[in-house]
Image (cartoon, rainbow, N blue to C red; front, side, top):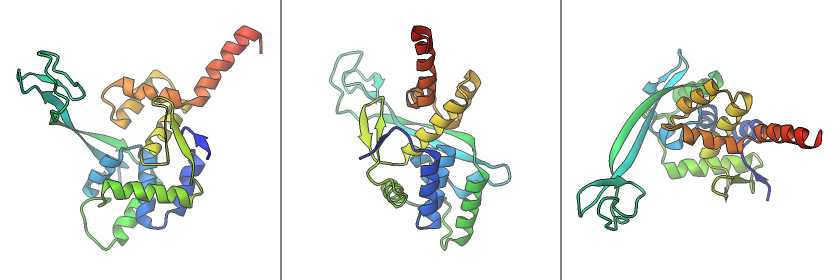
Length: 229
């Protein structure tokens, strides 16, 4: 069982190449190219892709933002177990409310070419680019990984210390790591935050834990200072 933190570019290319259908190629290519969430891809309408400007309007809907205490009626965070105002147990209270946002993201030429070909060849006229369920999309990604020779490859999340097989979010991680490895300047970090749709920079900053090149660079500088290596 091989352990790794992110998918490499060659592994992603192999998954696209070995995808059994054009639809599956589009799924892998779009997730890898844009780093969008699988939920965003599945909500994406064909009409929201501008093939000339090479951008896509990505919908982002965050549901269940706040809980409302049945005792005092005041609101609390969606993950809070007890009301911060009266102390009542609200662990069984379901969060309510929606926050709907959209953002424009750049899409690569090769990905758009696959999308256009898929749209022209598919038999249905569904307004969604990928009219599939979340569960089925996970299965497709797993199957493409196996066909690309990545069966048994376990990815480690250094933040949670949890291990999992290749899944849609793996492409998002890979994009963020490559982005920060190539340029970790403040401007680049802000652009990555906007591109990924993170409301808080702290969420984007988590990807620094996955950038081995940056860590190795800092570690080498410390060694030179300590031991003259």
